[in-house]
Image (cartoon, rainbow, N blue to C red; front, side, top):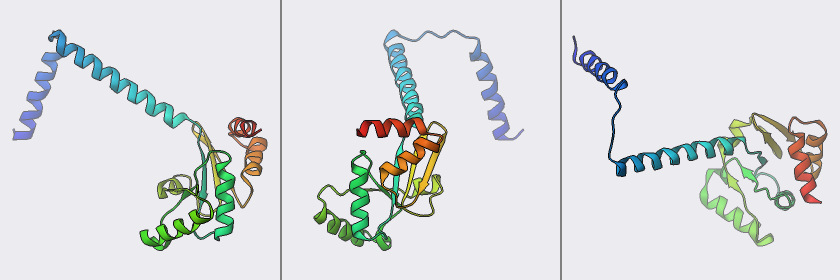
Length: 172
């Protein structure tokens, strides 16, 4: 029998011997085990809740002219949305910083995140685009619509209409 198979057999035997045993550990160690177990359970529950929490994602690009980009970002801010860009300007940090600085001179609250994975995850191939998620479902709206109109479209026709209606109601 080769070495690995021997070790696997030994591990299997050891595991079978332990399976029926009731092992008592000192109370101080048991409380640490309980605390760590509760923490792991809490983190798992939080991760599940975060995945179920509705999201509103506004996909934009630095290729949009500055005037339009500023207008779209301001519109998104009304709804508490931070726009998402696919990547850097010409794949260059300096150019991205320069463009961001130019835009922040026009609007001191200009902000965005860069997340190419979200573009991939939702199959975004054109901008502007808006995604509203609800559980396992999501609605995708393409076009230069004001955020309110895109939300209205989802509220009327979308799988996540209840989420869109709540966002619109909060705006009033």
